[in-house]
Image 1 (tube, one colour):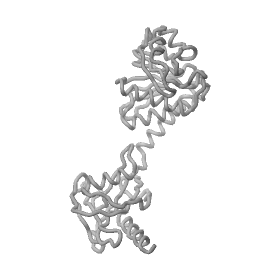
Image 2 (tube, helix red, strand yellow; image 1 turned 45 degrees about the vertical axis):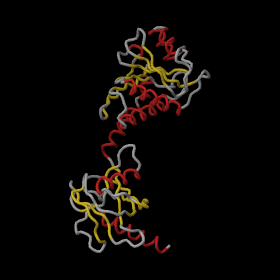
Image 3 (cartoon, rainbow, N blue to C red; image 1 turned 90 degrees about the vertical axis):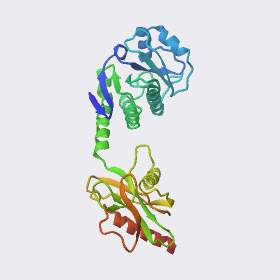
Image 4 (tube, rainbow, N blue to C red; image 1 turned 180 degrees about the vertical axis):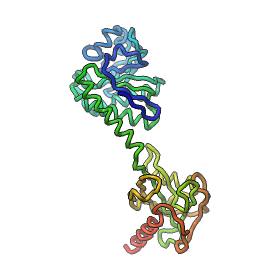
Length: 318
C-alpha cells in the first residue's frame, strides 16, 4: 500500500522491521535505552549488543526525544531510538505524537531520506495500533506540508492483524491528500480605508492574473501562516502599504464567490496612508473614492467593501 504526497512516498508494509534494507529504522525505546523486549529486543538480538551500548552511552534522554546510533549488523544504516516511555513502561498518545515528531526532525537534521517506523507504543506500551498509526500519519503529513519530511517513510507491522488495523491510517492519508488538492482554499482580503472615522477612499489593485478586474489586496494563506500574518504580507507585497488598526471583518464562503474554485476568504478591515506601489500580483494599484469605484470589481469584493463601510458606520454610532 503506497501513496505519494508532494516529494514523499509513504508505504504501509507487513514485514520484520529488523531485516528491512532501509537507511534508518525506528526503535520504540525507554528513556534509559535498555533494549529488552518488543522491537528493541529484536533489534538487539539481530543487530548486536553494540547498538544498545551506543544508545546507553547517550542515555538518559527525555521522554518524547530521539537519538541516533549505528545499526550494527542489521541491513539498515542507522537506528533512531525514540523514548516512548520511562522505566515504568507507561506511555500515552501525546507522547507518541512527540516521539514521531522528534524522529522526523532528527532525520531532517541528519539528512536521512528513508525511515521505517513500527507502531510506536503499541507493543509493550499497549496502545491501540490504529490510533498510534493515525497519530504518526498526522505527523508525517504535517512534516511533508512543512517540507521537512524524508523522501520515503515506511509504516511497518509484524502481524497481519496489526497491518490490517494500522493500514487504516493509509485511508486517512489518502483523505488528507485529496482534501489538500480539492480545497476549499483559504484566502485573505484587505479592506483598506484612508480613515476609520470618516472613510472617503479605499485601496484596490488591478489583477495581473485571471479573473481580471479591480480587487481588494489579498491572496492565499501559506501553510504555517496565520490569517493575520497573511493579510499583512499580501497587503505589503501588492501595495507597499502597512495595515493600521486592522481587525477581522467576517468570513465569506459562498462556493460560487470565486469562479476558479472554492475559496473561503477572511476579510479584514483597517486603514493605511501613503502612496500605493503595486507589485507582486498587482498590475496597478490606487486609492479610489468610495463614491467612484470602478465598474468591474472581481469576486464578491464590492459586497465586502459595502460590509466594511457598514461596520465602520456601526462603530461610529456606538
